[in-house]
Length: 439
Ligand code: SF4
Picture (tube, rainbow, N blue to C red):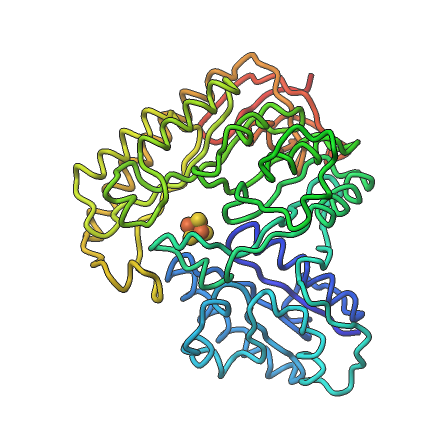
């Protein structure tokens, strides 16, 4: 029996793609293995967000190639963003001595054919589907799932490889999405996270599938409303939202019953000139206005963001505008990147990466310290409150999971609670975890 081993880097979209590849491989009769030494095929789903992420893959492929000494049949494949953005073939060439298969994620539909070309002894029982998003992911747990509703991106932020790696924005049909989520809910799924690069710019290919009594006209808000009608689901989450597409209707939909009490809204910078250079379609003022509307509609919502420090030409004053934006928005969580040039992007072509490494590190530290201080202060407010926790794991009598605000929580408990939503009274809060007891 052939065995496969998957290695996945990067975002939840990559996770979801890897789950789709599992469906294909299992459809071919392959079995999963945790041990790469036992595998006949190893597939690496890659991330290109930073050069260091790509460098890791070159080293990994070289090391995995050594396993071929013991198993000459072993196939090593690379997919994901590195394959997607390799328009000039340089990445493929660099990996060619170690890697047998190299394909962008959407070409996974051809995986059976690609494997059969290498192993003529296997028979093909899969017919290729055109759209890889119609492949149902092989979900590892029953109680929560990532559901991709959109792939690719048309925004072309000047620092970002995604539009090159994943192509232009394309959305799944309402019918497909609802069928998938209804199936998940019927099977015990409690929490669904909708995935897309600018997820709230969802444009339905079949708007006639929306219910007649759906109160929204904005397609994303209308989709959220439809999902809210599915029995059994308890939580609905989406990522990543693009500021300009937080329309009044999408903001209104934050109050739908299943919506988690958290929104991730990448700002990237708090300075208008830097935002312009980043080719973001929003200004600082527009971002602040959207945050104000969100907080007015759903007071107490936890807000998260992404920020890049040290972008090309960023002055101290411009960086301070980002710090100030952070203070004004009072984010619950923020993910910080020190800018690094990605080949093929607009920023790599037209701007100079002229902020020194030391300065980037200092700016990163400053905003990171601010986030730690803010998160700590905000988490303290949960002390004495009851929060709901979807339990993910239990080790040595301690359960771990996420609250409705997407904060990590922990309490003494037993493994039978895994996959259940449990009320917890918060007794102690630190920066990264709310600790408490089951209520
Ligand atoms: Fe990249 Fe911008 Fe698209 Fe996000 S919105 S995936 S940062 S191009």
